Amino acid sequence: MKVSVATMDIKKIKAEAMVISLFEKEGTGGYKDFDKAARGLIADLVKKGNFKGKAGESLFLLPSPEIYPKRILLLGLGEKEKYTLDKMRQASAKAGQEMRSRGIKTFAMQAPGSDALKEDNKRKGQAIAEGLILGLYQFEEYKTEKKEDKMIDKVVIAARDEREAREVKKGIELGRVLAEAANFTRDLVNRPSNDKTPIMLSDEARRMAGRFGLSCEILNEAAIKRLKMGGLLGVAKGSKEPPRFIILGHNKNAKNLDTIVIIGKAITFDSGGISIKPSENMEKMKYDMSGGAAVMGAMQAAARLKIPLRIIGLIPAAENLPSGAAQKPGDIVRMHDGKTVEIISTDAEGRMILGDALSYAKSYKPKAVIDLATLTGACVIALGNDAIGMMGTDDKLKDKVKEAGELSYERVWELPLWEEYGELIKSDIADIKNVGGRPAGTITGGYFLSRFIEKTQWVHLDIAGTAWEEKGRPYKPKGATGVGIRLLSELFINW
Image (cartoon, rainbow, N blue to C red; front, side, top):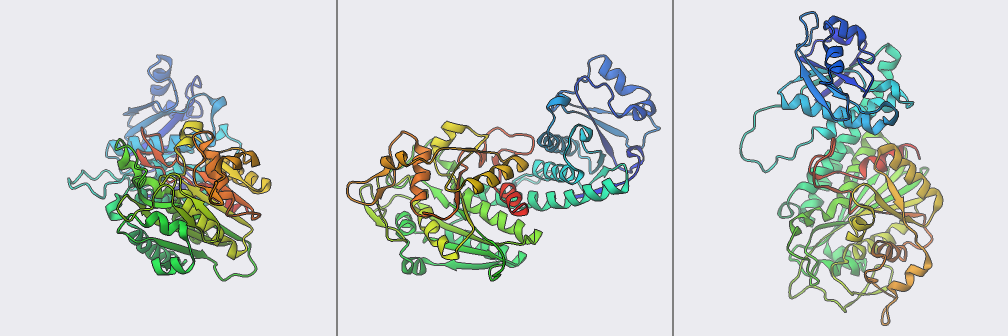
């Protein structure tokens, strides 16, 4: 889909349809001239209450012959006072979805509700592109029935002058990169686990790295053993699929750039191991590699945007299955940095593979380390599906991540990482245990990870509640959300 910008009257843009977006209780808004050409059609609909402008409301019209587009989509934006950049993103997604549902190939629109926002035109263009591309995402790789082609070919954004057009175009280009990277991640997460074993995920990482000019090193089981990564090896013991440790690099050899290491949990399927999960909803555990997929997407975006940072992506990948060879509750594991961990639950496997990756990350002497993981069901209980749980060791880094979360609308909420929580994971026979019981489950998971990063500036992001969408939202269709890519990219851009 091509998204372009034109400095001309929207009524004269050659397209099959156009979008008119209206706020609640605003009448025809900035479309009075247009409504005059349409012989008062919109004003009449609003006056009679047939269109109220509520958020997400839509109505298709056939206007008068004087207007070139033969079809008009009226799109509601809700209350003007409550309008945000994310609602512009949502409105753009809704516009694209409505057009696609009617088989429309080309349409024109102005930035929905643009005058109600203080953000610059580049930000608005970015939101429009993100909304359109994220909102039109579909995962149909495994569908055998041929669907009627309803893909949108072209969207034209009408700008008032050349300066606005240039700024909006820059934003659209940025938004496209971030949204396409997120959709790449969605494809990986939505894919079934029989088609994304640790080896298959490694192969995908190598192909992606080659395409975008990233360095890529894949450590096999023998190399992982040499590094004494007992956490990763222990989790993988129950599966016939061997583990992999994926290392991606952007500007890997640069010596004069700040280094940021991003780490993603990649359990390509999580049965819980010997501490097996209930069968209900277990099929969704293919999404337990969402953190690793997010790292791959963020690395792709960094390469495409030529971010002036040295960024290292670490992805420990394994399957967590029960078998005669699987690790057991009560086992003691020695980690990459030498610490010993008593296994209380084999279903607390994510923190084990991340512990190894976090201690390995220190070898890069980074300015910051950020990990993303579908770590705890407790995070969903605490924060639901709208907030990412955040913990960390450095207030400045946490502030940067929080700001990036607000800009991307992948928002974070901080949980405490007090020493008292460390008491819950003390072990009688090892340095620590991998579970601290039911109380503060998300926090004890984060505290466990903190033992492997020590004084390095670090933030942990628990994306268990945000990586998967159950019902479908304006730019988040059912399934994988691709969360984390836009947040990390905003962090890189503003570093």
